[in-house]
Image (cartoon, rainbow, N blue to C red; front, side, top):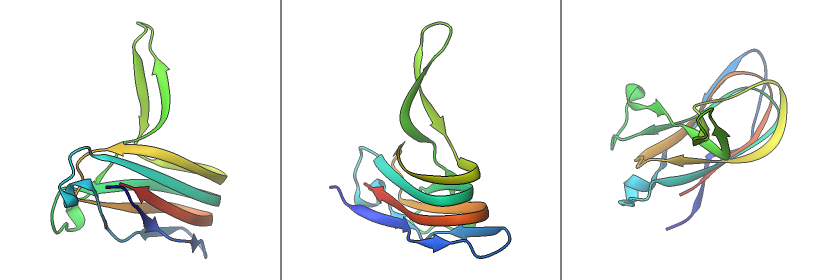
Length: 132
């Protein structure tokens, strides 16, 4: 199964410091899928703030049932021993106007996934989409 769903549609900053939590969308585990691979596309225009993708394992999650998902953009790091590791982040923090469309991978058997935007002081979120 592969389809694309919106975590957030176009949202424009209005004033002050804003927060925005997107609606929950069904992750792989909701459908009984076991590969757990989700691809997240984040499209920003002049955005200043923090983007976090969150997951839940609960069928009907409450406020405390969400956790931050680690995202990987396909970059790798090599440590002093020569070990190659994937570079992962739990949040995307932009302190200067970010203009980009980037893809990230998130692996986990999440029942629900949502976007959580905090410290948003400028710009537009053109879209945040997920392919599961």
